[in-house]
Length: 419
Image (cartoon, rainbow, N blue to C red; front, side, top):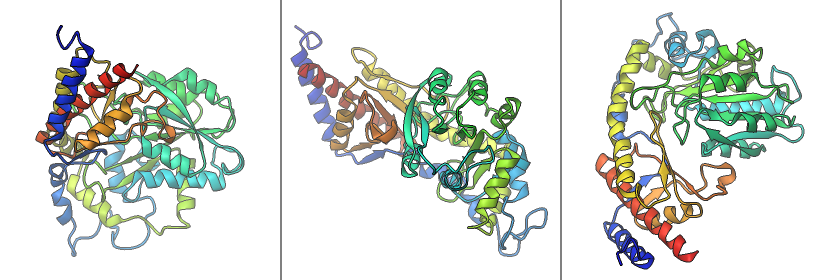
């Protein structure tokens, strides 16, 4: 009888393979989608893009001084076509789009929105959360007192019928979405699904979609999708205030020193600026000027992102190759093959994701906690694992992926032996 025919022999072989991996003494972290040092080096010239005697924008704005709440006009004009939004409806702000999401939600909680209705803090409030999804989205909404409602995803985006049923409840105020190369599956929303979501009848007149275009420029391979004109589609549907769109250069230039953007209807932009004014006398225009000079025009941004892709696509390919070589036969595992973004989603045998993560950690490879892809950190299937291959070196990514395969095989066989 071969090991493949003998479950106990297969389990012993899997355990031996895992032990061999664990003895390598690795110390790798693939928990979050951080840019690698080589990616950050591509933007080194940002540090010298503004000098002490040249601090004015092309239109004459002194970037050292107060004011300019909308952000530098020229930078907004540069990124508007890349994001597919009108420059007049785009704000350039601080370094974090997550901070802008928090601010917008806080303003809605305290003051309500231009779409009508009472401040959201009054009474029960719920947020729709497409799953698998982004843990920081879920954590922010939970911290602000929203009830989190899971919405399944399909190949076109959030499941339309599930959303339709959920928004019949007036307490459902908003929904997260990552429309292009979603975190963590890499799914891109279709225009048809976007049109349907933006046109939905909702019980709450102020139902809002938080449109996080975090990966709109992060293509890995052809063919690649293009950002959808969410603001235009919402206006066509007669619901111009339904979308708050967010983006940033955090994974384009320096992750801690980029520029974040907010785009929406004219009414929502005025609303956001009105409430921001109470706590800010303007964003960091020197950093915006650095970005403006570093890039110069939209084509330079696209070329920069091609250089980014050349650095990280081999890491995605290495993970996919290791998974295919180790798990294509005799395993219940499946995984995504994204055309952009920062993540690969691995779906393992139900009931084993937490065990895989623990095995990997004990062997020196840190993964995002099992369940992070779902609201409250609870994956009811215990099946989803997010892989973030960008930060480590290519050799380390290969080693981590090979070890991950050993962890998946061992966890599967342990579960089968216990059943």
